[in-house]
Amino acid sequence: MKPLTGAAVAASITFAFASEALATEWNVSLWGKRRAFTEHVEKLAELVGEKTDGAFTLNISYGGLSKNTENLDGISIGAFEMAQFCAGYHRDKNPTITVLELPFLGVESLEQERELSMALYDHPAVVEDLARWNATLVMPSPLPQYNFVGVGEVPHSLDDFQGLPVRATGGIGAAMEMIGAVPTSMSATEVRQALDSGVVKAVSFAPHAHMSFGTIETGTWWTTNMNPGTVNCPVVVNTDALDALPDDHREALMGSVDEALDHYIDYYNNQTMAKWGPALDERGIERVTYTTEELAAFKSAAADPATQAWLEEMSARGLPAQDLYDFVTGKLGQ
Figure 1 (cartoon, helix red, strand yellow):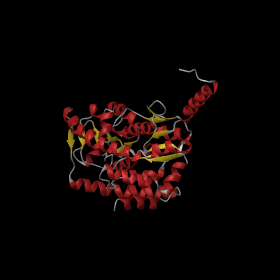
Figure 2 (figure 1 turned 90 degrees about the vertical axis):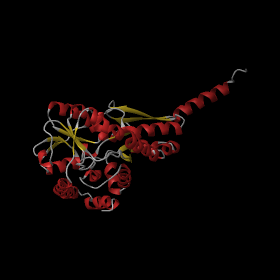
Figure 3 (figure 1 turned 180 degrees about the horizontal axis):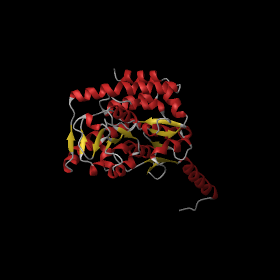
Figure 4 (figure 1 turned 180 degrees about the vertical axis):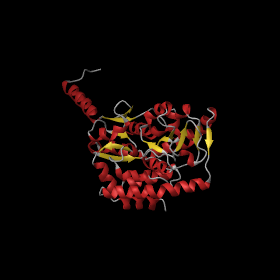
C-alpha cells in the first residue's frame, strides 16, 4: 500500500473537518422520565438520526437543562434548541394557545386533539405570540381528558368537591373553581409531594401522568368521567436554530413530525391505556362515576363562564380572542 501524498493527506483532513462541520447537535429539554408523554420526541430523535445517518442528533435531557416551567424561557435565549412545555404553566407567556385548554371543548380523541392543535399552531396570531419567545411550534403532545386521583373522603357527587384543594391548571382549574373546589397550579414534578403532604387532596392528570408521577401510589379514588378538559403541551424549537439548519437536516426534522405523532398516539392508545385499568385494580383504587345529570350541570356551570372570562381577558390584551375561539370550535364542528 502506497503512503499518502501530502496533497492526499490534506484532502483527507479537509474532508474530515467538513464532515464534522456539517454535523448538528441539538439539546432537548424535557422533564420527569421517558413516558407516553415524551414518546413522540423520542421517536423524532430516532427518525432524525436515521435520516441523516447520525449527522443530526437530538440530545434529550429529562430535567437536566431547565425546570419544566422555564423551558419556554430557555428556548427564547437559545439555552437549548428544543423543548416541551404546557400552556397552563404560564398562561401569560403563551395566551393564544390557552384557548385549547378551555373546559368542555368537546375533543373526543387523541387524533382530534392532534388535528386541532396542529391547525391552531399555524394561526397567524399564535405564530406571532410564540415568536415573542423566538419559538416555533412543531407538534403537540395530545392528551386525553383529565380526571382526578385523590385521597380522603370520596366525592360521590360533584357537590362533594366544595372546598376541596385540588391541583388543576388552565381551564380545568377554572372549571373546578365553578363547582367550589380550590384549584392550585403546580408543575407535574411537585404534585406527588403536595398530595402526600396534604397540600392538595386531589390531582388532575391524564392516566400516563398519574402513573409516571406516582399519584396512584397515594390516591384511593379516581373519577372516571368528569372529563372537564385537557392541557395543551407543545414541542417547540428555537426559531434561529431552526432557520440555521441545512436544508436536509430541516427536512429530516420537520418531515418526521407526522410519523412521530403517529407513533405517540399508537403508544398511548395501545400501551398506556392498556395498563391503566390493571394499575387501579392492583392498588384497590375506587372508581367514582358521576351521573349524566350531574355532568350536564357541571358543564352548564363551568363552560360558559370560563369561556366568557377567557374571551374578556384575552380581548383586553389586544388578542383576537373571539377569532381564536371561533377557529377552534369551528374545527370541532360546534
